[in-house]
Image (tube, rainbow, N blue to C red; front, side, top):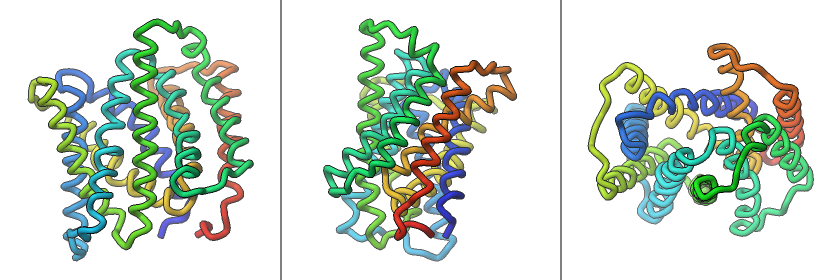
Length: 296
């Protein structure tokens, strides 16, 4: 079993770098279809891994509705809504809004599982959210609340809410004696099916881009961004709770900007550097004092 810090690091580095892979997916293939292809391929990989390991591919009937619900929420609806929102607002504002999943997870954990609010985690969240706002301050400060922006905000917040509800279902699923790999394999194929049906209902042209950029980015998103990262993330949910696990969302943009510094000559401002320091401080507060039962 991997230690919590390593799980956390894997999720941050992989999902932080998927921003660039997702950009390569945009183009002639409709977003709904790209999401469907990604999770269908990831599901096939996970089923193959489960079969090779000699384990059963079957999920107990009583657990299957939860697996399906997790798949629809986490591997379809939340992804599609954030794609829709990104068409109306800047990437920076999407990152700021998506970081609110920390708040949603904390509230939903209390609502569904009666998990008490941790004052240390609340403080960490305030510091971290302030940091992410500073990192993207130029984009945040220039926002004009017109109809397009409000529509983008609504789509993105809807994505955050559905993703957080998916996290709650995942917590429930991982407490049952079903391997995370198998939960994800079944859940992802349901998410892919829903995304494909949505594409059909919206009359999207059924297309697959046989270009190196599209195929390589799809493979990266399916294998690393889905199979590996989601497996590690669900392990974090089980061991440190949804609120702490979702703190990784604050570090994704930092990883993306570090990559931009190397490859596209991103220039750091004083506000951005201050924001990163706040995010790191918030991470330290959130993770340095975990409940004893969760230290593995």
